[in-house]
Image (cartoon, rainbow, N blue to C red; front, side, top):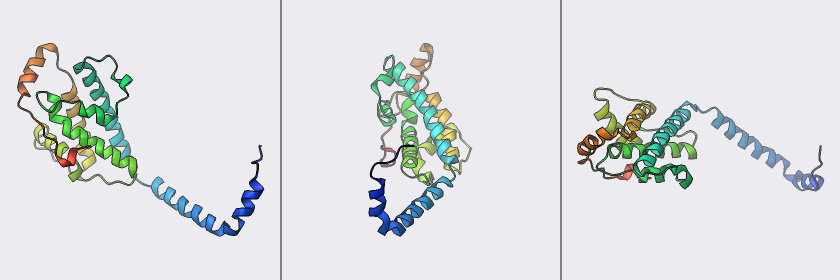
Length: 183
């Protein structure tokens, strides 16, 4: 094993502070254990859903923008969502919900113990009210998971024969981003 050059000097300098150093390590260890004991199932479920939606989002953008590999552009999820139309396309209907999904995923990225609230998902619930009428989603994570296949379906480009029908059906959809779904 290699010796760390200067370790004796480091230990000599820290020796008078050793009790404080141990207290700091113990505090950090408690925080680590607290985060490790957090129920990570919601994080995994949101991340899985986010990745699936991103797969469909990427395919949608490649087809609609006639780009061979949008991955070469190295766009963030938020940048990809910004490229979605605000009207005249089925993707416009799910765009605000996709933005909110990304916002929830980002909140987990900054706080492992983040609790998803229904208020964080207004646009997701609005889509569910239309697409899954009569169903109630009390758990926000379940709402996200129920929203995902709808978003993916709306991001799927219809066959050429259906493109005109979809364009006609969604030409009146104009999604104005609200303050809650930005980002």
